[in-house]
Image (cartoon, rainbow, N blue to C red; front, side):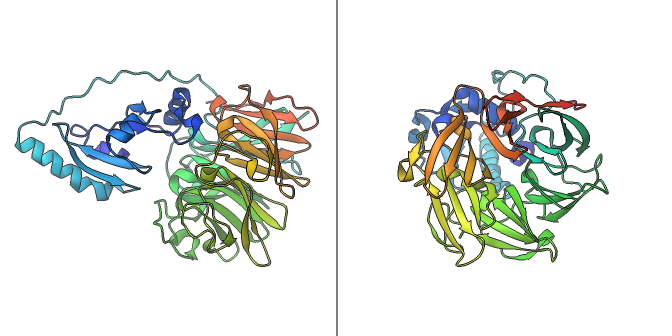
Length: 436
């Protein structure tokens, strides 16, 4: 849409119609924050009761409807499509309207209804990584298109910023800390002296050399991949919305939310290949290559299994690292089964979880759209609310555990929240030396 808006600036008006699948997606404040986070400039209608959806006979997300100046439907497309593919249809409607003298290029006066966010050192932080061995904290400062490196101090509720990686301007540039550019970075993983970053907006994985203070691209081309991408050299393969990364030995596992898969990068050889998921969007267990995932967005491991937050199916699932290579489900039952229900087995309901962390036989889960932290016991398939639900957290997206503390990327509150595990008490982490 951004490309089309720039190409047809005075001829095309884009209006987003948000018919939310999840309950939390039907709340206007949440939609406004999402629009702000994604830097959407066009107006959005909250179609919470699906009236516009039904009026245009929509059946799938996303659906694009092209309307001519007379208000007639000139075309409709269900599913994702590129600007290059859609542009000829827009051009035909523009040419027809101009030939009939009905094309009005004057700007439409849409009212501004979203207030400016308060100034904050962080802006929509998506993920956080605490390294208790070195006493460091890494933050994906997603809305500022940068990564923050800080030194933890005292009781772990304060940190002093040591470095800011990235210029702060959205872009796709390798180089030194001040020159490098990210676009909406998310997941973080530490391996040796390198910090791997899921650079979601650039459809790439970047590596930050913490000693040399340089950023390089290790996977992805900077452009979104298709639905049938195959293995290859890391920088030659187009990725699709990598959301999280996890380092284990010589492997870097990548939660590829856009293609509903998990990929594996051999960081020594530089080879990249799909590891789990057929590419179909569904909740289907089985052998890794045949299993169907649904927007995996968070990764954790116990050393035997790779656990992942399968966001669109509101599920917590696992894939065997060795052995038969199976994929299974801990909790969650399908794409349209979601809610907020503790319990065991198939009774459990989450709502679009994005973050996950392993600790001592349990998984801490950022139950994002419920504004809660849940604890899930994989062996018993049991889930319980651990914190949140009263507004303390607003769409938490990432978790990390270090030194008996839980660090939370409290995304819509523009902060990192921290609490001792022994006595749940959230505080806002102070990041000394960080400016907007």
